[in-house]
Length: 238
Ligand code: ADP
Picture 1 (tube, protein in one colour):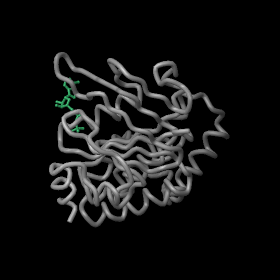
Picture 2 (tube, rainbow, N blue to C red):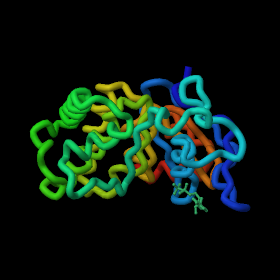
Picture 3 (cartoon, rainbow, N blue to C red):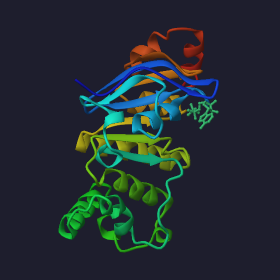
């Protein structure tokens, strides 16, 4: 069964159709990239999966439950955005543990989970520092630790690497893939970078003007683009 299943989702903002009858399956434990030009609906789809936006029609399931029926605090979704904000006056450990506060876990459990998350992103020794004492790449990893500390079923990433310079970006791609593989979390990654999508993912979905025009394993989409637009769009990866 797919961990996340999007079926015939339409989302309008006033008269503007941002998502038009979009469907895509995201099998358990996979790494998926949503690709498409700016304004094609990638972020809207991610926010609709997260339950921040409601679809006008269609359905989104996580496991066998419709997202509409899962209260926000029980949604088991971790999120990370391009402009991830860390709390400047809180330590790294407190930043990571923030999502646990609202879940009312015991302080022992909180410490254990923060320790595990920091270890996963290889920042175990920096828990007492403040964000300004870390490099950009390290802060990015703190944001990732914060997204996974609650043991979510699904990780949603909206252009998480686009603020980084090229070499850091490649390091973080490798790191992200390692962590995703290690914890086996179903991950949906929004990017406008074709190369990033083709390198990282098990399956890609290409959006254009709110429609899912093609989805499948990156190599098969790359080798058999559905139309000239897709061929040219993916050609930018060369
Ligand atoms: P992408 O992530 O692919 O760049 P978005 O999902 O952010 O695209 O946006 C898709 C379209 O929906 C854009 O034309 C955008 O202007 C529009 N849109 C997104 N959010 C809103 C909103 N809250 N109100 C009105 N229009 C919106």
